[in-house]
Image (cartoon, rainbow, N blue to C red; front, side, top):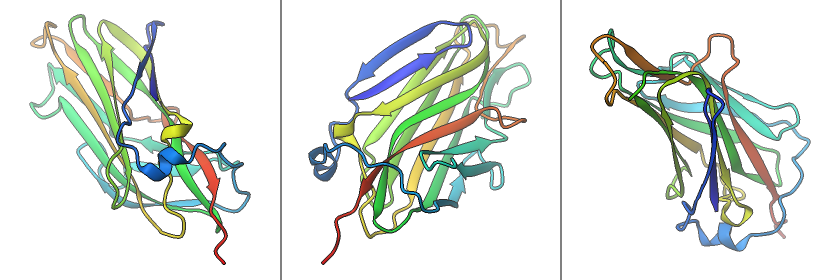
Length: 225
């Protein structure tokens, strides 16, 4: 079960659940054992590919938590908008990241949770959508999520995606596969006065306070004899 938690800046919280992973790989579905503790060795992440209107090269940075439980992505130019002052193409922004996650020998990982944060200014009648998809290089995309924010809204927003243990998709042991994250921000003016007002949703940050956090699930690889 893939669960979605949505919290708007106006203090309204909605919790939704949807089975979004019916196509998860057989290996992941069969592995329902509890996840292992994080490895103690060093983990590094290289940005192998960055592409999209919301993340020009150099506008997205990645860091690993000291305890190896998560990694964060920080954007500096990720904003979609409609209305006064906006270009016709500004209503949709996207970002495609290819991340090379280097883990200690004997371990592999999955991403069990993703926390997205940002700021939104939506006029009454306007709405915004945040979408994400995840998959390992050379494998079918098995996880997709979508969240909607509705105006009037002025403030911070946060949405959370969670993957149940039975649906976790682990990177193949002994094989280097980039972890691909495709995200999108989209704004619709709806019934708002787009001639005189502007609505926007942002996932960027000027002070690094709005970070996207991806939380690891770890598994020990079988010992080869």
